[in-house]
Image 1 (cartoon, rainbow, N blue to C red):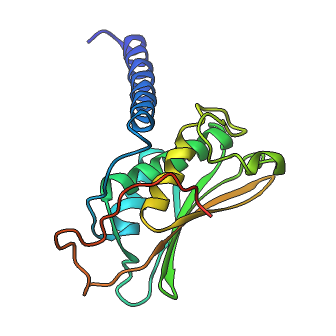
Image 2 (image 1 turned 120 degrees about the horizontal axis):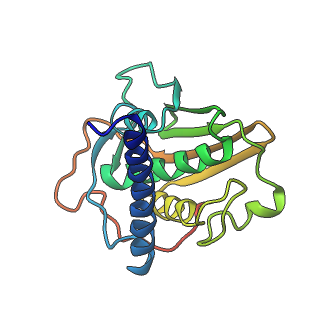
Length: 202
Protein backbone atom coordinates (compact mmCIF):
# COMPACT_ATOMS: atom_id res chain seq x y z
CA UNK A 1 0.00 0.00 0.00
CA UNK A 2 3.01 2.33 -0.08
CA UNK A 3 2.70 3.10 -3.79
CA UNK A 4 4.51 2.30 -7.02
CA UNK A 5 7.76 4.06 -6.09
CA UNK A 6 8.14 2.02 -2.89
CA UNK A 7 7.39 -1.12 -4.89
CA UNK A 8 10.23 -0.33 -7.31
CA UNK A 9 12.58 0.32 -4.41
CA UNK A 10 11.65 -3.02 -2.87
CA UNK A 11 12.19 -4.79 -6.20
CA UNK A 12 15.65 -3.21 -6.45
CA UNK A 13 16.46 -4.23 -2.88
CA UNK A 14 15.34 -7.80 -3.57
CA UNK A 15 17.47 -7.98 -6.71
CA UNK A 16 20.55 -6.65 -4.92
CA UNK A 17 20.01 -8.99 -1.96
CA UNK A 18 19.71 -11.97 -4.30
CA UNK A 19 22.92 -10.99 -6.04
CA UNK A 20 24.76 -10.63 -2.73
CA UNK A 21 23.42 -14.00 -1.57
CA UNK A 22 24.79 -15.65 -4.72
CA UNK A 23 28.16 -13.96 -4.19
CA UNK A 24 28.36 -15.15 -0.57
CA UNK A 25 27.36 -18.66 -1.62
CA UNK A 26 30.07 -18.72 -4.31
CA UNK A 27 32.71 -17.52 -1.84
CA UNK A 28 31.66 -20.15 0.69
CA UNK A 29 31.83 -22.86 -1.96
CA UNK A 30 35.42 -21.95 -2.79
CA UNK A 31 36.44 -21.62 0.86
CA UNK A 32 35.24 -25.18 1.57
CA UNK A 33 38.00 -26.69 -0.50
CA UNK A 34 36.47 -25.96 -3.88
CA UNK A 35 32.79 -26.82 -4.01
CA UNK A 36 31.74 -29.82 -1.93
CA UNK A 37 32.86 -33.27 -0.88
CA UNK A 38 30.47 -35.44 -2.89
CA UNK A 39 27.51 -35.43 -5.23
CA UNK A 40 24.01 -36.76 -4.51
CA UNK A 41 23.29 -38.15 -7.97
CA UNK A 42 19.89 -39.01 -9.41
CA UNK A 43 18.56 -39.77 -12.86
CA UNK A 44 17.75 -36.31 -14.24
CA UNK A 45 16.14 -35.07 -17.46
CA UNK A 46 18.48 -32.21 -18.18
CA UNK A 47 16.05 -30.17 -20.28
CA UNK A 48 12.82 -30.43 -18.32
CA UNK A 49 14.33 -30.54 -14.84
CA UNK A 50 17.43 -28.35 -15.14
CA UNK A 51 17.89 -26.13 -18.18
CA UNK A 52 14.33 -24.96 -18.93
CA UNK A 53 13.39 -24.04 -15.32
CA UNK A 54 16.66 -22.18 -14.75
CA UNK A 55 16.31 -20.38 -18.10
CA UNK A 56 12.88 -19.14 -17.02
CA UNK A 57 14.46 -17.46 -13.98
CA UNK A 58 16.40 -15.06 -16.23
CA UNK A 59 13.94 -14.90 -19.10
CA UNK A 60 16.21 -16.81 -21.48
CA UNK A 61 14.76 -18.29 -24.66
CA UNK A 62 14.55 -22.07 -25.00
CA UNK A 63 15.22 -22.81 -28.66
CA UNK A 64 16.15 -26.48 -28.83
CA UNK A 65 15.71 -29.77 -27.02
CA UNK A 66 15.89 -33.49 -27.45
CA UNK A 67 12.84 -34.65 -29.37
CA UNK A 68 13.68 -38.22 -30.34
CA UNK A 69 13.09 -41.40 -28.33
CA UNK A 70 12.12 -40.59 -24.75
CA UNK A 71 13.07 -36.97 -25.39
CA UNK A 72 14.51 -36.62 -21.90
CA UNK A 73 18.31 -36.34 -22.45
CA UNK A 74 18.99 -38.19 -19.20
CA UNK A 75 22.06 -37.84 -17.01
CA UNK A 76 23.12 -39.12 -13.60
CA UNK A 77 23.67 -35.91 -11.69
CA UNK A 78 23.12 -33.96 -8.51
CA UNK A 79 20.15 -31.75 -9.51
CA UNK A 80 20.99 -28.95 -7.08
CA UNK A 81 24.59 -28.74 -8.25
CA UNK A 82 23.67 -29.01 -11.92
CA UNK A 83 21.16 -26.17 -11.58
CA UNK A 84 23.96 -24.12 -10.03
CA UNK A 85 26.09 -24.75 -13.13
CA UNK A 86 23.40 -23.35 -15.41
CA UNK A 87 22.49 -20.47 -13.09
CA UNK A 88 26.14 -19.39 -13.20
CA UNK A 89 26.38 -19.78 -16.98
CA UNK A 90 23.12 -17.91 -17.53
CA UNK A 91 24.12 -15.09 -15.16
CA UNK A 92 27.35 -14.74 -17.10
CA UNK A 93 25.50 -14.75 -20.42
CA UNK A 94 23.00 -12.13 -19.25
CA UNK A 95 25.81 -9.81 -18.13
CA UNK A 96 27.57 -10.23 -21.46
CA UNK A 97 24.42 -9.66 -23.51
CA UNK A 98 23.20 -6.69 -21.49
CA UNK A 99 19.60 -5.92 -20.54
CA UNK A 100 18.39 -5.78 -24.15
CA UNK A 101 20.51 -8.65 -25.48
CA UNK A 102 19.43 -12.16 -26.33
CA UNK A 103 20.20 -15.25 -24.24
CA UNK A 104 19.22 -18.68 -25.52
CA UNK A 105 19.49 -22.26 -24.25
CA UNK A 106 19.08 -25.70 -25.77
CA UNK A 107 20.08 -29.34 -25.34
CA UNK A 108 20.36 -32.65 -27.18
CA UNK A 109 21.67 -36.18 -26.74
CA UNK A 110 23.75 -38.26 -29.15
CA UNK A 111 26.42 -40.97 -29.08
CA UNK A 112 26.28 -41.46 -25.33
CA UNK A 113 26.62 -37.78 -24.46
CA UNK A 114 24.18 -35.10 -23.38
CA UNK A 115 24.99 -31.55 -24.44
CA UNK A 116 23.26 -28.48 -23.03
CA UNK A 117 24.25 -25.00 -24.09
CA UNK A 118 23.87 -21.34 -23.14
CA UNK A 119 24.39 -18.73 -25.84
CA UNK A 120 24.41 -14.93 -25.79
CA UNK A 121 24.72 -12.24 -28.45
CA UNK A 122 27.24 -10.14 -26.51
CA UNK A 123 30.62 -8.84 -27.72
CA UNK A 124 32.42 -12.19 -27.49
CA UNK A 125 35.44 -13.28 -25.45
CA UNK A 126 38.92 -12.25 -26.64
CA UNK A 127 41.34 -15.10 -27.29
CA UNK A 128 43.74 -13.91 -24.60
CA UNK A 129 41.05 -14.27 -21.89
CA UNK A 130 39.90 -17.78 -22.75
CA UNK A 131 42.78 -19.74 -21.18
CA UNK A 132 42.07 -18.30 -17.72
CA UNK A 133 38.30 -18.01 -18.01
CA UNK A 134 37.57 -20.85 -15.56
CA UNK A 135 40.09 -19.70 -12.95
CA UNK A 136 38.68 -18.04 -9.79
CA UNK A 137 38.57 -14.25 -9.68
CA UNK A 138 39.07 -13.85 -13.42
CA UNK A 139 35.98 -11.90 -14.57
CA UNK A 140 34.88 -12.24 -18.16
CA UNK A 141 34.16 -9.35 -20.52
CA UNK A 142 30.74 -8.84 -18.96
CA UNK A 143 32.20 -8.26 -15.50
CA UNK A 144 31.09 -10.16 -12.41
CA UNK A 145 33.17 -11.61 -9.59
CA UNK A 146 35.06 -14.22 -11.59
CA UNK A 147 33.61 -17.00 -9.42
CA UNK A 148 30.62 -18.24 -11.39
CA UNK A 149 32.50 -19.80 -14.30
CA UNK A 150 35.14 -21.29 -12.00
CA UNK A 151 32.49 -23.06 -9.94
CA UNK A 152 30.55 -24.13 -13.04
CA UNK A 153 33.71 -25.68 -14.45
CA UNK A 154 34.54 -27.53 -11.24
CA UNK A 155 31.02 -28.90 -10.81
CA UNK A 156 30.85 -30.04 -14.41
CA UNK A 157 34.20 -31.84 -14.09
CA UNK A 158 32.95 -33.49 -10.89
CA UNK A 159 30.06 -34.95 -12.92
CA UNK A 160 32.55 -36.45 -15.37
CA UNK A 161 31.87 -33.77 -17.96
CA UNK A 162 33.43 -30.70 -19.50
CA UNK A 163 32.48 -27.22 -20.70
CA UNK A 164 33.24 -26.29 -24.29
CA UNK A 165 33.44 -22.69 -25.47
CA UNK A 166 32.98 -21.10 -28.85
CA UNK A 167 32.96 -17.33 -29.12
CA UNK A 168 32.75 -14.60 -31.72
CA UNK A 169 31.18 -11.14 -31.62
CA UNK A 170 27.42 -11.68 -31.38
CA UNK A 171 27.61 -15.42 -30.61
CA UNK A 172 29.24 -16.86 -27.50
CA UNK A 173 28.23 -20.38 -26.50
CA UNK A 174 29.12 -22.41 -23.42
CA UNK A 175 28.23 -26.09 -23.89
CA UNK A 176 28.05 -28.44 -20.91
CA UNK A 177 28.87 -31.98 -22.08
CA UNK A 178 27.95 -34.84 -19.72
CA UNK A 179 27.87 -38.63 -19.98
CA UNK A 180 24.40 -39.77 -21.01
CA UNK A 181 22.32 -42.18 -18.93
CA UNK A 182 19.20 -44.26 -19.46
CA UNK A 183 16.30 -45.48 -17.36
CA UNK A 184 18.09 -48.74 -16.52
CA UNK A 185 20.53 -46.72 -14.40
CA UNK A 186 19.47 -45.67 -10.95
CA UNK A 187 20.85 -43.77 -7.99
CA UNK A 188 21.48 -46.71 -5.68
CA UNK A 189 23.64 -45.96 -2.66
CA UNK A 190 26.93 -44.61 -3.93
CA UNK A 191 26.09 -44.91 -7.64
CA UNK A 192 27.60 -42.13 -9.66
CA UNK A 193 28.88 -40.30 -6.61
CA UNK A 194 32.33 -38.85 -6.89
CA UNK A 195 34.49 -36.57 -4.80
CA UNK A 196 34.84 -33.15 -6.27
CA UNK A 197 38.30 -32.38 -7.60
CA UNK A 198 39.97 -29.23 -8.77
CA UNK A 199 40.38 -30.22 -12.42
CA UNK A 200 39.39 -27.60 -14.91
CA UNK A 201 37.13 -28.59 -17.81
CA UNK A 202 38.79 -29.70 -20.98
